[in-house]
Image 1 (tube, helix red, strand yellow):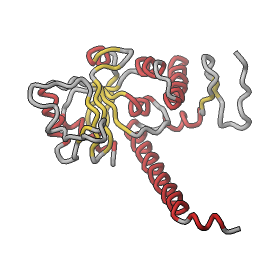
Image 2 (tube, chains in turn blue, purple; image 1 turned 60 degrees about the vertical axis):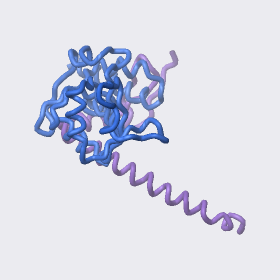
Image 3 (cartoon, chains in turn green, yellow; image 1 turned 90 degrees about the vertical axis):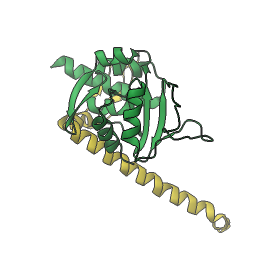
Image 4 (cartoon, chains in turn yellow, green; image 1 turned 90 degrees about the horizontal axis):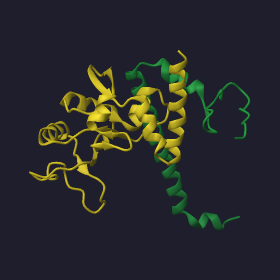
Length: 160
Length: 74
């Protein structure tokens, strides 16, 4: 498992995505460890094709139902579209969300995203304000811990 | 809202005013001192270390589960 390799693979694939979740928090300065990679993207047929190509050597499977975990190549079927895709791969867990509650859809998240240079590519990352808004809507203890760090980081930026 | 007294030592220095949570600013300082790539690499290493520790913990737990007769000896 190697989430950094997974991120590099996605960047090389030229999929249009915004990094969200725990990795985005790390980019903004959080010290919390995350177990998966979350991105916001719209999986049109073209984007899905890029994703399948990018992950073809990494055994991507849908992971939400422990009794039925088809390959990404099988599902979605031609003509089908999935708003959210939850995968496990040999490089780690990848969640793809089309909509980030309560911020908005991909276009909205992308509009306010920041761009960073990483692994030789440009990566869009959810803005700190939007990430804080997301964490404020969540109730898990680990999200509350990340929220406090993010609020502290934003305060530092404002004081500069 | 009750005021919290920060723990002694320099580890916990910042109190977020809107919530009663303490943030370890030394960790933030370290994280911000790294480039994005360094930060993700450091994060990945931390995650791998945690996975290794979890695996080691499971081994110990499984060993104690496999020898219940030991618990009867005083």
